[in-house]
Image (cartoon, rainbow, N blue to C red):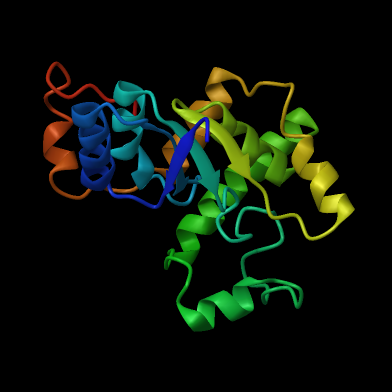
Length: 194
């Protein structure tokens, strides 16, 4: 085994594991498979700063927020018949997200799609691939068309204004202690502006 990774650790679990590896001269984790998307940005609060500080790359799962960022969900429209969200919503496997929050993000993605000629999923994936500490994303394409569309998220860049727009519409209030720590950047620098 050349490299070790971990999945879905909290910040303290990951840091404790890295400390134990250092203490005994063992191989450290270099990858952390974690949930992160425009709909779920709490990765930025603790896991991203830890990843940057400790050199752990993010391997991001569900980068399109369980299909909510594909452009198929629309205000006032029922879930598409093919949506996996039908089963996930019943099982409670996906985090609950306020519908209006989803639609605000999708509206911004739509605007940027119109400006760039790219698709909604391509923009959401491109934003994620440009984030600090993100090494790669795990895509869940069900067919060749979706796969090709997802692969179109690379080899181009969003503008600073487009990134700022996406960050503004997707930000959610931080929980404690993160809302408090943001005031002390000299002791706890944050890798993102929002």
